[in-house]
Image 1 (cartoon, rainbow, N blue to C red):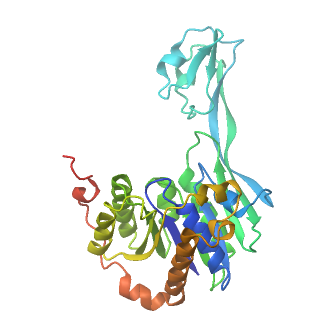
Image 2: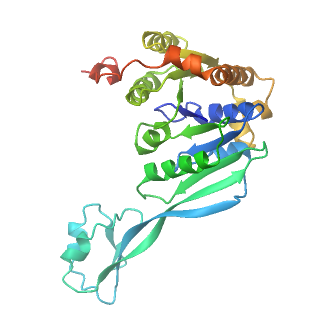
Image 3: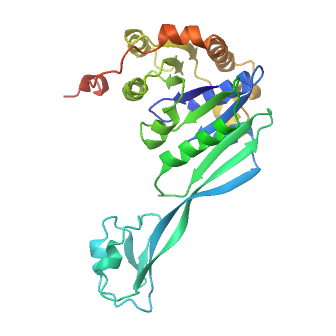
Length: 322
């Protein structure tokens, strides 16, 4: 079993496009399980055209405060002391926002009236499973707005995928943007990180940060440069970063106006516009990753990091900033 995590550090650079292509093309020769590891804003199911879930189960519980208006004396102490600003006055009544409330009990402790504020349980999120029209399963998650523990739910997604895997399975993980809890969980335990970047200063800055994360986990990484022709003057800086750090570039994808149209049609780019230059480039990316997967042991021995990357502030500091 191999886990391939697609990450970028920055949103909107094409992670889901690359992930969906890898899952579809790898599934032609081996058992694949796709995991959407962006629990706050999952969208891999939209690309695969999944409209109905075969299984949807609640995951985790959180406590949320509730003010009982019939007992409230409107002293305002709960609102003044709430560390999250979750309490407001609406139509003369003190009301708790279930999105902002973290269930910390502060309001209950400062309230002078016993029983005026209580807590109740709410479901934190849901884990969903479906079989795509390509024959492989998709495991996804959906967190309720403002709820914590996105890293835990991603870890649970991966455990469910592993429980369904065999020796020849490839688990393709579509990571969230950034380097937070969800991304840490999606990368932890993965065998290969496919990093996606575009030729912009913001993308390079975030690529540096997520690359440091892969080195923390001692993971080999490869790079896909999406929309490489969008800013040709900056492209050499992305390529230079890859060369300096020994990151193999497995593909360069041109900008294509048809991509948002394929998303609107709930179809992968390679299916909606198979003859477009971007689709052809995506297929080459999948071919290169397939070669790595097929010859994993020898490729890993050659490309594995020799030691964790030491913390160097300059690697994540945007050029021109002190």
